[in-house]
Image (cartoon, rainbow, N blue to C red; front, side, top):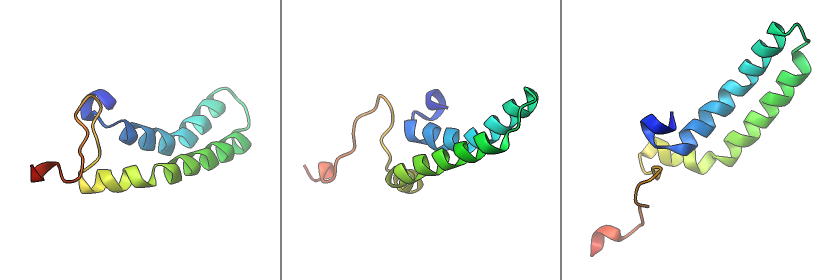
Amino acid sequence: LVFLTKIVSLSSALGSVFYPFVTWGVLCFLGREPLYDSVCAAIIAIIILVMHKDNIGRMLTGTENKFGGKKKTEGADEE
């Protein structure tokens, strides 16, 4: 996803959203009880999303920096 969008925080946010579901699926496939690990994965996902709150806001407004691109600075257009 990073290679398509060049937005690292988008990959981090989506990865954290899917993490509990992937954990659940893998543990079911392996025949293990998935509840405890999936709850822990969901808590970790929530922490990651909270930590990326500012990045998510910038993605929604279209001002998030892209991987390999120039950083956008405020007031750069005023020169």
